[in-house]
Length: 404
Image 1 (cartoon, rainbow, N blue to C red):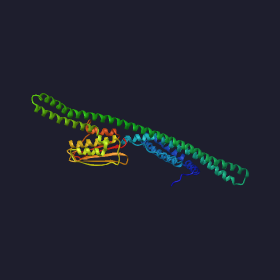
Image 2 (cartoon, rainbow, N blue to C red):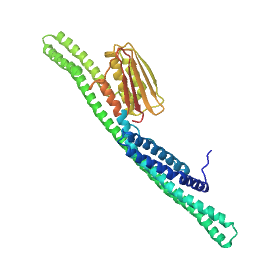
Image 3 (cartoon, one colour):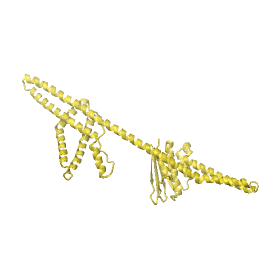
Image 4 (cartoon, one colour):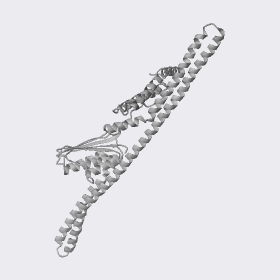
């Protein structure tokens, strides 16, 4: 178990660090300034100055990274390490943009300012060390009057060394914490922007899913139930006309209308089930998927292992994704079998995969069934992946947060 250095030890370490910086700090700063001056002078010589300037940015980042970690480790601040600004676009342009952002990075320049301040304090500490050494040697020469002055010099120089170390500690911690606070605020702003983007995408997906669902319901009503009900009405009208003149024919027409009415009721039930499966609320996703597999026109191998229930939105999104995939497999893919796997993963997400052995070639068409699936999953805060090469097989994977 690592123990944290006590304050006196940290004070001694601070003095040693400052002494070291007093020896190498100004030399390194002078070298970097000289390199920058040379780079500016070479800007118009075949672009050599640009190469030197780029190298200088990397050198400054290395010094800043070391300084940030040094201060964090010395004073146990737990500061996040400096990282190079990531490349947001591919290619040379993306690299150049990341280099420019790094060159103006506030945390890097704060760390470099800390380095320069440490060098200044280090030079002062070295001067105090020299004063202390001269006073200490003079103290033992035997002359009473110089000895008194030398004792005062020893005490004052030692106090000055400690004072410079304590003052530098305050300055270094203040600079480091200011940089850390700025980074936290920037991270919070980035996270808020990302959450806003995700929320906007979810809203867009919900609106799109609702539009697709409304279009599907209208199509099913127009193409299925509505013509059947019109036929029932016409058949009953004919029966009414024949009820006196030909009772037997009227009975047959009524029987035909009765059969068509039952078929219309069945279609309405299926349509209602397509809007929302009540069995999801009553018995859960496992039972609902078992019912879907039982109604499927192709054999379905069902592998559902759920230790607990997820939210209604999450289960509904996965249910309709699987139901639509099995419908497509039966209608379009010429598949002879399908497999459905559903799990709750360790990161508290509901994961499902539907795969059939059909001919493949499935695509997401605006307004189509898969488009509705994708948007419903997106509205639930999840993601979906469709893999359907020509020749098959077709696989759809869906991941939705359990608490969505």
